[in-house]
Image: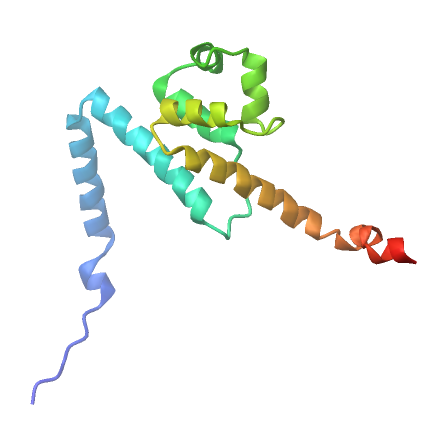
Length: 154
């Protein structure tokens, strides 16, 4: 009668194998062209946006400006240059990016074309941030009891 031997995770994955993998990735990365590295960096930003949208556990609010800054850093471009590309004043762009102004359809489409991601992603980031603010306000729900319609009927 044979006994089943349990395979331990450490026999499959350990620090030595992790170090080997890290070295392999580093060597492979060095062989990539600058264009391929940029493409990977932009793709990583897209995945970060997707993760932010999908993660309900996030206690950290990430502004649209934070994501745009990631793109600008990857592309080595300034916000002022982006404003010129978008045919607008830098101060107006700043208001959209920081949430002082709600994203218009025009701005969403510009961000989408700039970043090569679906326009809905930008709207979903804005909505997620608004929900984040709503959750903070919900903690003060007792202060809003005075707005109950029944107060008008008394």
